[in-house]
Amino acid sequence: MTTTRTATTAAQLRSTDRAVARGFGVFTGTVGVLVAAWLLLFSLPGALDRERDFRAAAACAPAGGDDCLSTVPARIDRAVPVKPSPRGGPWTWMHLTEADGTTSRTRLEGSANRWPAARAEQRVDVTYWRGQIRYVDFESERRYTSADVRGDYRLYLAWGLVSGTLGVLSLILLYWGTRLTRASGRARPWLVGTPVLGGFLLTGIGTAATFATDSAGAALQVVGVSAAVLLAVCGVVAVVSARRSRGDDTVVMQPSVPTTELVLPVTIVGEVPYAGEGGHLVVGPVGPAHLSAAPDWTGVAARREVPQTLTPIRVRPPYWSDFEHIDDGRKCLVLECEDKGEGEGEDEGVRVLIVTHRKHMPWLLGALRSAPTG
Image 1 (cartoon, one colour):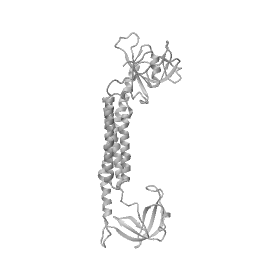
Image 2 (cartoon, helix red, strand yellow):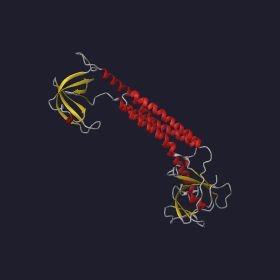
Image 3 (cartoon, helix red, strand yellow):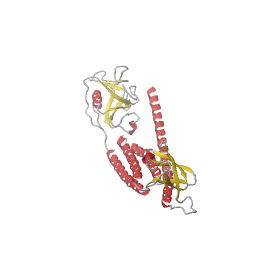
Image 4 (spheres, one colour):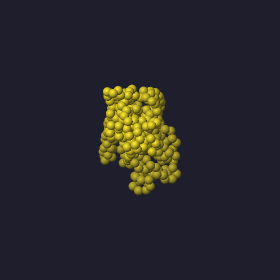
């Protein structure tokens, strides 16, 4: 009675955990998609419009406004390194005094030590656009300031693609996982890993394309082609996995009777006294106590004998429903057993699962003195 109540409570807790995980997946996926929509549909067009207007701007007429390029002479007062740098790498605050006595400062990328022309009292020309200094002309070179709008779209595009891809990936994983668990009980972690790998590859490709191309359109073309290729690959994987899920999944394994006593790490699942979320089985040659459950790797203390009524049925791969009992499904196999108990009817057996590493399964089968049948 206590075992049944404990198993029921554990099942309820696991069901709650799965519901929380699904809710968190839906929340993160939705937030990612909404953030991407904001960045790509609102912020990105604004950045592209500003860049287009800046590139099309002409020198100001006498009565020009903020949308034209206004160039004024200035004198460098001093150059001060930026600490910390706003965008990584060395940046420098350039303090200026303009011809009409107005003082200003602007931020330039790089160290002033690299510019022979950036010395105190040096004359320069600064160009304003929409109220901010966009670039500074020295004697022989032009340096753009941190207010340069060219390429600002790249950050919005890159973060939009990252956020959108990860958001969509979260939603796809929820759907993919639901379909897999319904279509086939077999647990293959690489099936879930396929969309994860595809999503991260698409994220990396999108980010690289954003900074490697010279326009947002070109970057989106690269992302579109890459998404089509990755989607096709994931589709092939889905088809292959569906075909592999058909038929009998019994694993044929030759039992090996141990000649000495061995302690095998296992997990026993079922409403039986010797079950638990973790532990060890002590297996040995055929005898009165050839199979015992123990709580630690020594297998010495607190042994609980496994009854002779435990009958192996078959060995199979892990199922999705087993993951709550399995630490590493890639290396484990599951031995399905039935424990009918002493003096019970033929139809009253208890289903028992023994999960262990595949290399330990032959010893377990040998200790039970029976090979599984399909």
